[in-house]
Image (cartoon, rainbow, N blue to C red; front, side, top):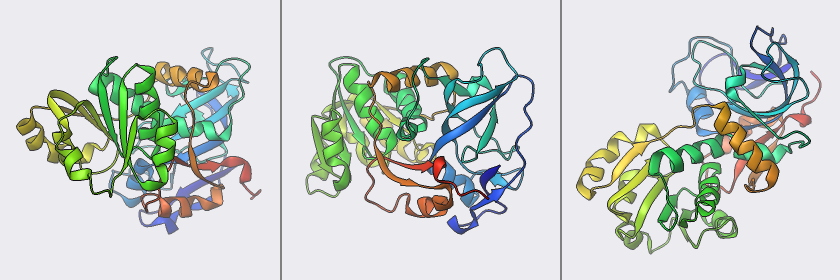
Length: 316
């Protein structure tokens, strides 16, 4: 089978599509033939060596959409379409940008029977799970509240806008210029360019009950929240530096991460199938374009997810 992997930490050039043995299915696992995966900030951190590695070669990718083709558990039968999110696994080499993935049911969400996922649905898997945790566990958004999403042009931010609106909250967005139209289309009442002249006033406004920071410097945005409000920060590494500002402004600030959980992933899969959540894809690549996707991530102009379409793989 094919897999995108790397044999040392470094720049995007270390990523290669290689021919590797198919995984051996263990008791309690399912074998998924993947349809698509996405490129995220956590992929880049692993590849750069900013998170610990125990084994090389290391495969890349943390999320995927695919179909179960074999099973060693009664929990999921072959033919089921699933959304998959892996956890941090420094002592394992597996990733999701592969042809076949052996994975535990606890990391799989089930799409409804009769629904065949699209490649673009993968835009809502890891980003959607992070947004769900940010709104449910981080800011605990309630109907009628007003929330600001910073970094709203990426997969987490765009999912957070939709989920907040579904909860009955009002939501505003700060994003790059390329994403402003999508933010408004998906439910933001107002959307501002993060380079705009009004940013200093917005940052000090204290007009919001809740804040989700999906990109940017959290400490700059906490004063936009009223005293006693809540903030969720999706970059755990940026959270400690925001603590002094959180204490000064009286905002409860917490870091959030996607983690993985079958119940939450199934919740997402059902809403994707119903059309309640709309995926936004910024750019598609084939597996041989993963290095380019890594290089372009964070380079500006973000609107939606960078998706790896596994159907574009050339036979090795």
